[in-house]
Length: 288
Image (tube, rainbow, N blue to C red; front, side):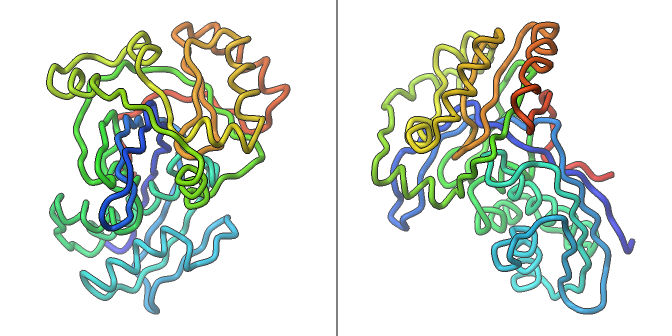
């Protein structure tokens, strides 16, 4: 095999709590993550001269998580010569885990392409060196993610239908954490996690409305008024639930009535350019 193609999913945070800093100054977190059917597409081909990346972004190579993932394999597993083509569709600096998903895709693709036989535990170890969302993105689906992203458990979640809006404002993840460390406050309530992990309680819309929040949301709303405005527009258009994803600035809404969702989409696309209809998906990385 000389070439492999794949697609990588965006993720939404249905819940995000920042528990504090670890002894190594990483943020310990508890999240409920869901893969959705908004995709980037990647083609990886064996090359002849190091790691080469072609994409439709303006990301500096040293900041590119695709490059970081390939270089990590090169430095820690085996030397590789590879050409990578990335067709970027998932909005960047959006809280949708697009870059993390791409990095997870590269780990999976290189493992297959070069027959590296990396076991699941080592894939997670590699992934968490790149970013907290990358281990989840290796698997996708509906998961509870804890620690610095390395503790991943299945959860039972309804197959929600979404509208996703990415405003023009951007929020780099590192800056979001800095803002939270200076000004943010976390909530203490976490007892429901045991219900979904141990008791296997299903996450339905009532569970979401009763328990879920995003610790980043309040602090990012203070920086960008558009976050709260999008949420208001969603609720005016019949959303059951709306929240910012990740460190922002994407805001999503859950609709349990699909006719109402389509009507809301048609109304809101007149106001917002980057708007997507989306549904749950079971995989973070899919080989094509």
